[in-house]
Length: 71
Image (cartoon, rainbow, N blue to C red; front, top):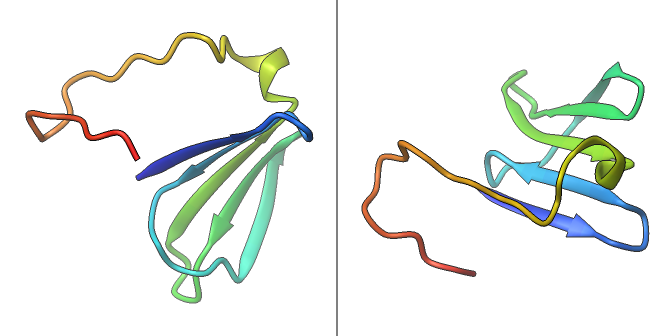
């Protein structure tokens, strides 16, 4: 999983899988779910992210690995 932020567009994207998106569904104004060819969720796009979340504070918990490697 990878999280990326584009300051120019104020968009936060959560990459859940390294597969191409073929279909998108805006489930709420500014929140778009991306799906692969099999209908599996591969990403979440949050537009106007700085208005929806505290982007200066990221907390991870109960992940199934011991060390977090920065990309």
